[in-house]
Image (cartoon, rainbow, N blue to C red; front, top):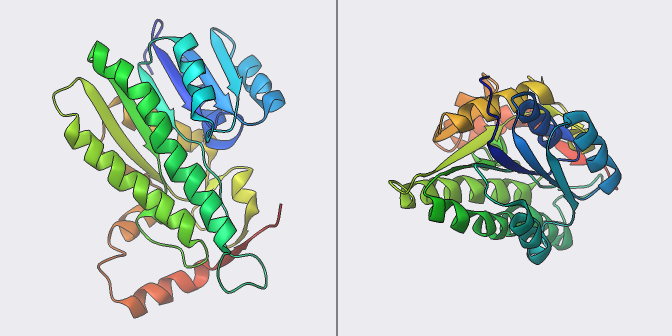
Length: 254
């Protein structure tokens, strides 16, 4: 990756997993970084690993005012990677996730993501430059029966991002939507079930950064899960159930 010294990025969900790997990937190229996460100690460790010019804030992304204060202090943002989120769904012994679980997942993964995006967007519009990367999931294209709210939240990010991209055409602000499959992360460890074609968080980060900086509209990985997810809503329900049968899971209780 070419040197990006002088350019700045904010990454949410940066204290572990994909967010941490994205931060490290950008740090190697000399980006000035703003890192957001819930765990202050882990966030500080990521900042030390990145080195260079790094600012951090530990906050719950549902606290939009806290995030807005951080963005104001940070200054201009060239790249915004919206990566925060939780995985939750059906617990062992349940047929379907609870209403409380569904509400929390939607509030964190979708509602707070959209609210935070609109904290960063006005500055990009004013400068007529910037790139937004929304990290969704293959579950946003191929719904998971064991995690309906998670699937809905990720589908919402896909549609919001693609709609926003069209709305911003010609403005100088780009929007890319990323749909990863199974990635080896601490959050992934809460998924108790088969995880085919799992990749490392470093591999996922490289793909996210590369495609976002190229302003790719919609991309996902790994193969062969990506093309299968794209066609999942078009294939017969019985065939989909056959495919999903090996992917059923429960979520570890916190």
